[in-house]
Image (cartoon, rainbow, N blue to C red; front, side):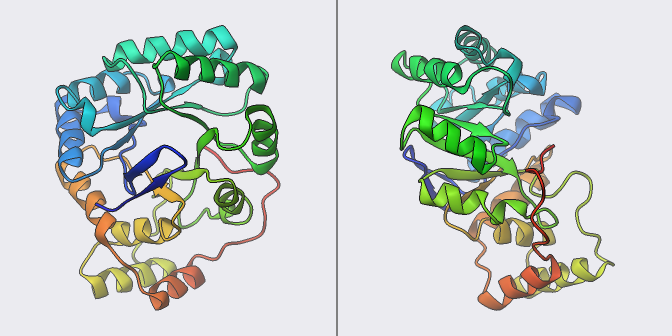
Length: 278
């Protein structure tokens, strides 16, 4: 599994493991899939207080393996006051059965002042409860405001919606993050129940490239999304097979002609009026 620099934090696996809806299926299978993912190098595990029972599932999966994992959780905007952020983090730590998070994120922009949330993040860093912090679903205006509050070099990452049919972040968000040393983490990298169908025109291009490399279309999708050195992806896997499929994408090298064909098949499209999110 390839690793690359994650903001100023250090090296993190390019392909990680998302856990949204992980608690809605077979718990034993989910735990096994997470463990298998770690075995295969997908040591970046992402969760959130909003994800129901996902945090306890992760806690079970990382027993005796905490030091191998780059663990991320998120605070809900409604809890993101200074005191509320600290309390929410402590609840997540308890559910995850760990003493610290490697990164803690504001899930999306809410009504609490960013200065209060940042102050709480920095308090948690000083206390050793988190090692870094970042945000999710922030467009460049929000990022500019956040940087003005926090100063240069404090924002570890921005986690955003990014998949083949939703490439809006390439217009401004990725360039802003690259310029400011902020990692970009792609959530829902296969879309939300709308992965390209093999019989569609774009789906055929995806399949042809997959066949040429002896891989799956989903591996090609992950390879395309993570072609930029600032981008990571966190697909969910609820089975051993899916975990192995996702992890194999971390070794895939697409050619310039592959990338050009995918760029044509899944065009960037016009700039949206607001940042897409789920």
